[in-house]
Length: 269
Image (tube, one colour):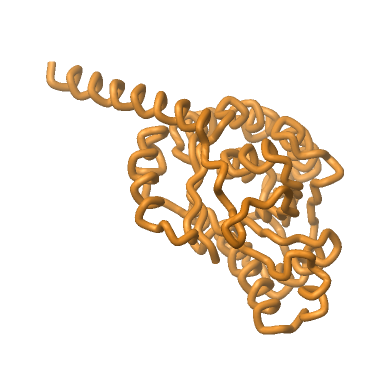
């Protein structure tokens, strides 16, 4: 009898939390990512990921927020995900998933570098990563970069290397290595944001995590934290389903139970 009461209580909190997510998605933070107190009409955003399917599993609240406001989102995937010799298939799946997420195919780039191959234990060179990112910044006049934090949500070494590669790239701009590029950038500087990793309880709490995430965001009212609710949660499932080679039971479970399906917390690097 006790376990029925516990299960019922969890289900009740889950439903209430999901209702909160839906409510907030209709009154979402339109003041996010302001500059000098004014919201920008359009930003050139580079989302840097490690593998095809990272965008659908982790970043859909951010992607939906940006695309729905007309920001120019570019997807930059640093491997084809060839750990199981399905790289070419996964590359095509990424294009399909991005179309579901309203990111045009011509704004999706996938790298297949011999030193950046998918797999646990595969160490990626941070300088190579930084140079690739800098080239994308230069080519597309990027003024905002979004990527993993130093844990990479799941702890995958490739996710973590991408974070350090982006940091190396951003630091090079900060120390004046590319002053001409910064001068040519109409916004004058480049912002970098990292997706905050949470502990396992929060990660698998689904919409319930909204209460803690809101509290964290309120504690950082200085603009260093952005809290984004997924305005189209169903797109997480639709986009991930495009990765049919990866759409196995435990990833279906992840997308259903993951707090990253319902919200993202971004921290300024």
